[in-house]
Image 1 (cartoon, rainbow, N blue to C red):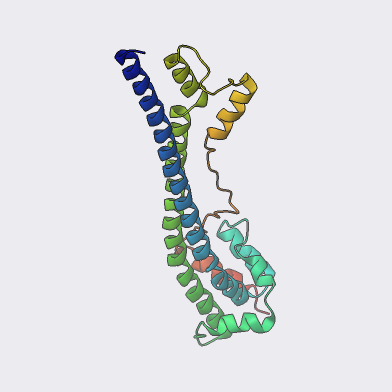
Image 2 (image 1 turned 90 degrees about the vertical axis):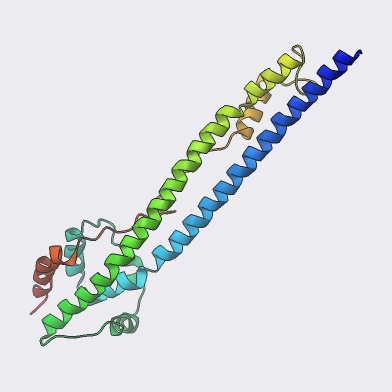
Length: 227
């Protein structure tokens, strides 16, 4: 083997090394980005769960299930947020939730309306803050999937194998060669899967209209509770 052959052999080895190094570097970046998304989702879910006491207090303030149903219809909330949590509370626990909110007003109806108002007004900024956090999760998810798509296109095993075979003059890139089924299996294992988030994994925050937009109807709902 003359100097030219040695130089070409060294170049082929370097090219193979760069392909492998680039593959694992890109894969490591995707793994880190995936973990960053996981951390973001975990932080979002933790913050989302903190809405439970407020919604439970809202349900307790409304009292009757019929009133809760009418309010949820008014707010276009098909799935009542944290209602299962509320049902698990004892009457004493529900009363403790309400004690955190000051009862004020001249009449029983007025006090109930004011309590619902106070809880609702506390929920609005919390839901708005969660919406911003949720949007960040969705943006991170979209960017991650775009990077996954680029990775799978750039590091397709069939393409890499063909490039190396071309450098080797058609020789199999792996000793002993690979059958087509084995190549496809390895190619599948090398790909990253697009990430999906279900509503259970990242539930969208409730979108609440301003109090002034629903005050009159809420007053009517509560008035219907009066004997």
